[in-house]
Length: 551
Image (cartoon, rainbow, N blue to C red; front, side):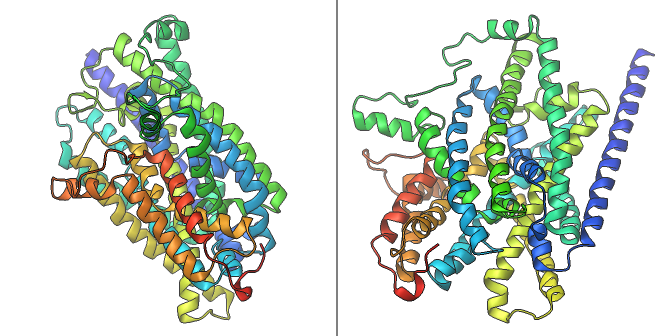
């Protein structure tokens, strides 16, 4: 009798969750339809008519950064490391936002660009603009597509919780997540194509409120169910690196100065990575990525854009600590308080990428659980929607209109961008399926590494060229820039050992032996390396008077 009552209560809880999900998505669709009424021009569709208030831009920036990948991946890092070293990266994130607000944003507003790569044509010429835009299109497609499979982890956990006698195997999960990401992508494409960037931003405002509530409840619940609260949790965290915040040295032992430098470059989270590596990562993602910058350019003026950008960096600090705290508390909760044999496993150990989704589904009460699931799915849809909008905008502005001519009718221009949105949706689905396949083959891959790694190889080239354009007046040429960007990407590929990694994945063996003196750099350092190589090569070339307009 008791078992039947439990099942009835559980079914009732899930019914409440489904009702909340239905209401949530109804609101999202309504936002898309409502915003579609005021998208008569490209500026309206791509930039919201530059009429979005700064606080909504702030919420949208936060929502894009707290994507489903971060929402699940960062607690996973806290669970895996049992410390706060990941939060060191916030130092560089905040400093970079100040630079972006002081240098990058004013230049974009001054030249009234829609695609930020238009600035590179003004400064250098059309070939630099097209190559930079092509790098963005390829890299953003990979980065956003690889994020796409992340929220489907939550759906897998829901399935396994409701079908405990028949949990999904590895390849069943692949097909299940594949079907889910196709549905999510098509729904996102629908409201993005209807409402443009305004629909995405106002959806972001809604979802960030839901996610804040979810994070707050998670911390409160865990502290309430660990004997002694935070002090009780600390009593179980006595290993050498537990609760550590600052890490100065690399993980590998070093016997020389160069060995110590190599070790730091090969370690993900150190103070040096925070000060230098994450600084360049954020300069690239917030200064040269159409996806993020397009949100900033929807503000009424550059001052409001700067306020939203800098405040988002300040807001990121407590948010990151909260998300990492959840991961650390989960390590104590499942390691010392609740010994749950049903925990998701990967190669004999608890799967850090699925531990927080498991907690959400297994522990959170009905109703709030539905809000969290809706928020996670909407977060993905918000990030995906902006990616679709920015990819379509850059393609149309930087390539389609140049190849096929710019229609005289503004509605026709918007129609082309909407059709491009559909095309990039199909591309992102393919990338998402490929990522799910790789994850199925390599279950222990880190989510953060997958997402950040994809743009680490190329965004240094973008940042290097933008910095030459913004900080110099007579350096950089069309031919030199193309060579510089290529050199930057090749250098990062070699320094990160990408050729051997790909060869091992496909052939099962290395292509070449890595020299002992050559460092193998982790993802926080890749953009810095690419930027230095790209800028160094580009500065060797002097621009011609006809293409060296000052920024």
